[in-house]
Image (cartoon, rainbow, N blue to C red; front, side, top):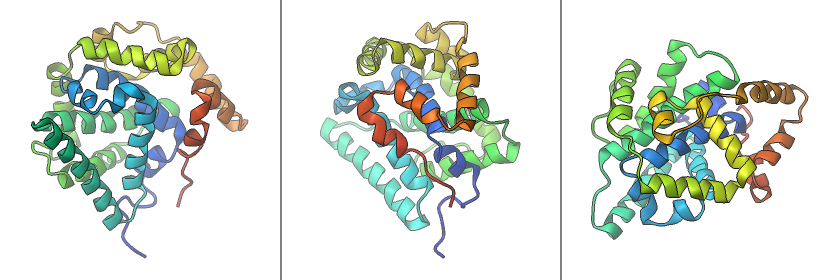
Length: 255
């Protein structure tokens, strides 16, 4: 058997093989994307503002391609992502700062942990370190400078990055307008309150998100729906119909 990039019993595979946790990860990440100081890079190609949900699903496909791939295939997928970004840099005639990559990597680590704990259970210190380790290897392969050496160092850097690299701008307002346009008023309302459950205080404050997380009872109902096997119906209600097939594709059964 060929070596896997992430071993078959890893908590990372459980997190990224479930549409429930993946959708929550990107609910949280969509908030931070809008506040990132380097968000102008996401606007440069025009793909994010033109179709934020489509961009979400394409990013998920890349992440899952890495997490569930054999070792060499995962490295090839990472190299492909790096090459795409190099192409964007060449088109713009400027270099994407390492801090922009690190911000994205850090939020994927954080929301992987937070989303799983919100839906399932508390993670152990070893499981959190394992999540960090997978994304550390992704960042290392991309040649990123300034990566923390371990999970403890990452926690400290995460707090620092949240304080230093989040800013509300005209891009923030525009991106949230695009979210609302893509989702419609009801689904957008759900997104906002899902973000309240997940994002750090600094992000909530900058986005002026509601202070009361009324979605907790709804989350309990959703958890119950999974036992009754009707959660697919709720997911279909919460995302536009044209993404139904892509939502189903987020679920990857255990190896």
